[in-house]
Length: 221
Length: 220
Image (tube, each protein chain N blue to C red):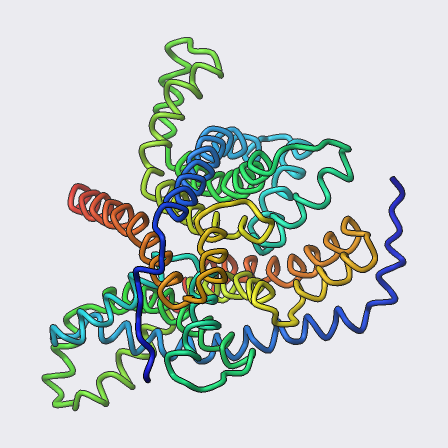
């Protein structure tokens, strides 16, 4: 067989549009998912039993089922239950945010655990209120320690975002599959799509080890 | 909301057939991943750059691209490039197995590095050949140390196996999709499918948690 990668130049614009959708979706879900994850992480370490149980069930359920079924559920069932039409992007954002919230909450929970109890005692001794304690003492440390794992979570989310192609969102994977079906050149098109994903995810994973190795050691935490 | 649930519409037997296919795929992928993942870990730790680099590239390619891209790629491109036609299940096992191999290799690598230097020296002193040292010293220690990660990766592959539904292998997800369109009962069907996946994954994640807690207790 002969390979003809030049064929892809004709579809440069479509691929870029798909990539843009993928990146947009990933960035929105990272921002929303991390915030959700931090709150859920706090809820899971809270003293309130109800809060702990509900957040626990949420996290276990989203970590224990395939992202694909979560997407299908939210695309096909949520509109039926809520009785409102959801746009493709909205459904995608909801599904991936909930997934990201579940995986980052575990990251935050681990980093919250690593904050020594002495610090809490010190906060009490200084008479800091609960909110000040969370915002000024717990949050900065938890976030700093969580950064490497959070970055890996972001890479996972970026990769999982390719699943929205299965429910018809025009992301990079969807565009790639369409082009490959229309041109009957799957080898060239799918290889380039894979390489685009790789070109974004690989530097990020390198950054994870870099941050783990240098920055955190410098901060000595 | 005025939707009436009807869980009777969900016939369980096609779902169980699908679950069986999913479990078969997972088991086969795990055999490949656990055994060849170790070999791959040794290869990426090789002293020779010429051996190390291509295998590192292989691992990074599988770790840094979406699993769905890998599966679609293998289904469409492997038959074209290598001019072979395998049945869909074999292709599914191949795709999931290669993916798991890459992730397990990373898990093994950390564990192999943690094997104490003295044990290897002792192996040399006892006159064991390099192969014997790997089989009797490195593998048992590294395998035991990486069990929690291997189990986690194994269960992730069970979840990723849902992706083969996209290339029309009749696994649990595929059967669920078919049933949902046939019965017009997406809520009930997808909920039951999600609960089945959960019922398989959850006990194993609990076991992993238990193993890790016990290990922490032992080491402290």
